[in-house]
Image (cartoon, rainbow, N blue to C red; front, side, top):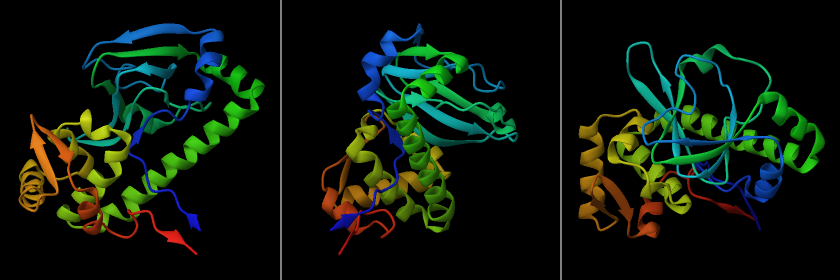
Length: 226
């Protein structure tokens, strides 16, 4: 039986195997308060951050003032992940601490040395990018065409295993989905009335994951192949 990987919105633990290695390489220990940006908005990506604790969200800010949350990043992952070029879209990307965040900050040149030295790390970087591209393709080519309720079910299903729902507010869920709070509230009310979720302090808790899976699209739920 072969099972395909489902998309991931909350990245955590994917570089934990290199924790000791990162500590041994030249870095700067950084701390960010809740609401602080990991690099200044309107600038290309600067340092590469290995997140030791806490969680951050990555958004694209549109010139009309609206934002779209792309992904969340927790302990044991890297963001932004190593690359050499500066891209214009980076000027519209912001990454903000959702809670106090501690990181090991590496320069691009410093991370390049590790990338070239450590083949396992280089392979992990490639795998991370594959996962991120998979998320972007899923969100663009699949979620874009779903109704708001189906989008919500899919998102909740994908966030639950990573523990992402513990750190994400209902307002942030709406910003991931690109929907209004009214539509989000309506969808959550339906799921709550059906005994699938409970809501508390602006957050969502899944209480019947199997029932939630039945409300998701086939592209979201892991489907084993013979």
